[in-house]
Length: 550
Image (tube, one colour):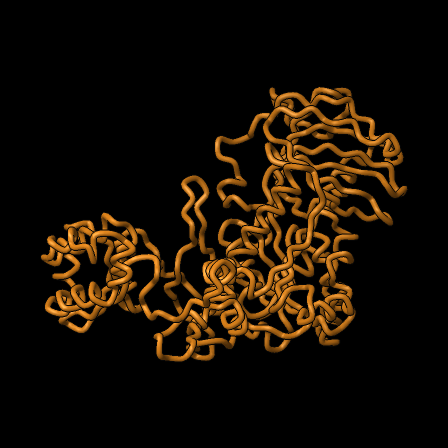
């Protein structure tokens, strides 16, 4: 439905088929669904009685539902004008209480330029540059929501944000996954035939990759052969209608294929692009292939992990990819904030697999810089606190303990029946405990080894000691705390029947994340995206399939 509330500065303009609402609302009906540019064309066709070569200004409140599948755009206050076919004409879509989308007519087509934050429901329109000759009067008055519940908010804080996930494997796709969990409309671009290699990573059930099912949640899958120029042109067209694009091609390939930020931003200056690489976009190694393993090695993580007399240890999960993805996700939000609040253009975010993890491991560098010493592997101990280790229980389980705070360390000694040690010079202060870490570990290990996990945890919990069981996957799913918070909901799936995956984090009180579906079939949304978003007809889609483009 498109609902229009007439503004105060041009009350003389006719609104065709106005329903005569007492608040001045005209309803254009529920049938039309389109992108912002298509919506403008619809409005002009609707007002066909007006002179198309003259200016039209209509200040209105519009509820625009541009759902394609489960994605929605939300509500706008729209102010536009049109003097076609001349280029340089602008139009602005005011997202209620949020920001302005500014569109420009170029070569007879509309393209979004940038967003300007509006802030609240009282706006004073700025007068545009004189050369654009936009004839609005200024005030649009007080705009009231049409419903008590904002349709944007009900779909998540990022509803209306379009994300183009054209990356492969872990870090890049994870960025889009986390944006999609909180309302972003994510289009996943995959190579025809096999799709993202992530579909084949890890455990498979009946040929279905379990990791893909989780990382692909809430995404729409389209196939697109980026090795073909026609495929790259389609990607550029999709990027022109996106807020965020995620790519992980090598820098040289990015430029050779015309998918670099400068090229994409020419058609969409408001675009925020994340470029994920192994080593970063600059430097002598910038064009080398890189995977998370290299990031875990070069960041210093492997050097610090493992037993003192053993080799460096790599994690058995995608640590570097995950940390890089988290870093890039909050970077996307900062870039969007800068664009929307400060009225700036979009920008390029350069993230690699080494630096985000190295940022968490900065302490050894600080030590070496100031003292010239290189920290070594310490197993489960840490040179910050003691006791700090994992201890085996009588029934064969493991228990982890941290005495990072002095009060916790004292409680731990008291809980194991050794209160006198809290006054012992070897254990009374943090530095003394660190120097005698082996001895305090022996005391804890001996006490815990005589008790079951449940018995030891009961004592530690009653004493407010920071201790926790070391869980495997079965124990994670059985934990009453995690069950109470519904951390692992069971999600229906066409291929697997259902699968338990982790719920979105963090938890929002008003706009919680959600999982609408797990990873889709390869190319499942080709018709919806290429036909609905790009307007390609059935014949063109058939031709693209025959040519191996999609």
